[in-house]
Length: 347
Image (tube, rainbow, N blue to C red):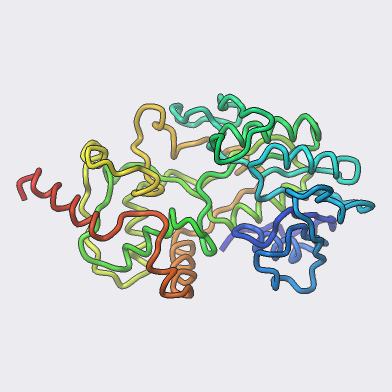
């Protein structure tokens, strides 16, 4: 269970751009539970049946005059959940800067140029920003987010709140980048575990992230916050055995050296998601300094809750979706690499 403030916050009028995708639903539920009034602004195409009692304004940010539905309204806070397009940030600012008190931008730890330093704080070196007119997929994710941060701060000044989450995980995730591990653990048998048992990993449950964002809004916080967990360093062995603990799996972990993993052309963070070899520019990948966020009230639910709820969400999906994970090793490829590793080790 997370620790939440018992004090009743001052009710806020919150406009959420998006609000029905991965991180939006819990964010809305938590804001409502804190007594805030929420308005959603989106195209009305993703999960339109959610929150029938919440005000919904329809608009397409790619359309001319796409913000028309927001005219003549005022809010205390605008939360921009889905954006990596700088133009969207500037257009939202033009439409809302005089009618909203604060702008919250969901950025990313990928905004940092590298994570070589262990314990890097919010003022660490960022990527060179993408061009003002850049958009995905032609421009890289990190530089796009840096440009978005810059544009937001240029428009909103000290009314800008920037959260930089790490890998966002938990029920509702459609990328499978964390989900692969508890799913694969549950399947049992011999399982490839990359690197060493002591390699650090880091992620943030979407519910911890979104609850923290709402509490920051209540505090009228500004500036950037690194937002990733858990509270203290978590090793990949602790993560895997933690996933095993919420199942009845007979899984057996075979630890495969990072150099061999790379020789086999397996991609950290993709074929082997969450994990990144702690070396070179990635030495501090899973060891960011989040003390600013922790001091501001960031909380972390247990790994068991995240793993268990992720599995529950997975099993509620269609058989076709369950069979088509978007990250992790295909079973045949895992067997090939394990066989090659055993041959190398003479076993």
